[in-house]
Image 1 (cartoon, rainbow, N blue to C red):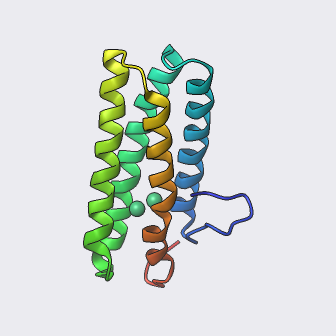
Image 2: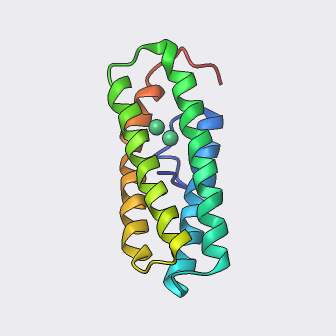
Length: 129
Ligand SMILES: [Fe+2]
Ligand SMILES: [Fe+2]
């Protein structure tokens, strides 16, 4: 999603900053899960990520709604799918289930691929910085 070389920047600073924060938190969670599946750190970080991603998606949808982008419907659908994946991870965390690593990796992969939808905003000059 976010890359230090800027290749994956959408070009809207608040969106890029959020992508960076989300990406850093995902890396932190991956490291924590690799160390031990369920720790208080994993629990609080997944909760933090859920809030962060929810706000981010709402902000994107607010920004691109007036633009009537060709992929708007699919983009919103993707947001729902990703939120669903996170909710399922949160449920596992709450109930102390194993197997978080695989589920979280899957979520992280999908989130990174999601940038292709976010890029549609890049090509619209109507979003103010
Ligand atoms: Fe998005
Ligand atoms: Fe995004």
